[in-house]
Each structure stands twice: as C-alpha cells, then as structure tokens.
Length: 129
Image 1 (cartoon, one colour):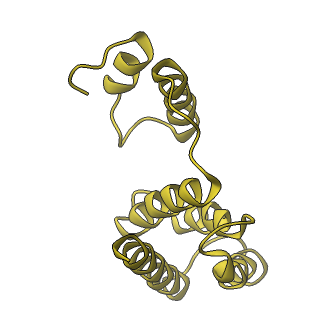
Image 2 (tube, helix red, strand yellow):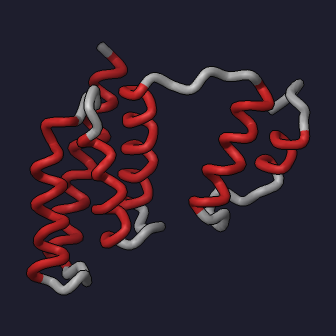
C-alpha cells in the first residue's frame, strides 16, 4: 500500500494472508477501514467479497469443506446478488450435518467445489456487465 501509512495498515501488511486467523484478519481489516476513513461497503458488495474469498479458499482447499459450506451462508443475506443460491448452500450444509455427521466426503467436496465455481463465474459475469 504505497503512500499509505498508519499503525493499522502496517499491522495488517505485516501479516501473512495464509496464516492469519479469520477472526484476527477481520479485526485488523476493520481497524484499517476506520484508520483510512473508508466507508463500509454496501451489503451486496460485502456479500460478493466474502463469497469470492470463501469460494477461492474452497477451491484451493485452504479451508476445509465443512468450514466453507457454513461460510457460504452469507449468500442468504437480504439484498445479496446470490440470494437464490441459499437453498443449495443450505441443502449441502444439511447433508453435511445430518447425513455425514459433520465430515465431508468426496462427493460433498465435489458438489461444493462445483457450487464455488458457479458462484465465482456468476460474480465475474456480474462484474463484467
């Protein structure tokens, strides 16, 4: 972040994107947002950002499928451009919890990866329109 300085910016910049726990990352990002005087994103933008990050992490397997499924519940927020996908996400979550005892099998991981790709494709198409 050339030309941008501040304690919160430096603290976030010093962290590794792959090892920083999500809770700490959210806290540090909130501090950067306040420090820079940035407005909070509109809900559809926030949902798109969270869904994109979650889908990318699902596809590169940097988070377990069990975590990814639950994080994708963000698509259900009112005003979300992905709201119609909530039944699909909920169905995968129910299958994970009710049928698989909370442990994703290969089939569920394959279905989740397909959903993640579909979400990313849709968000990409929405940004190019």
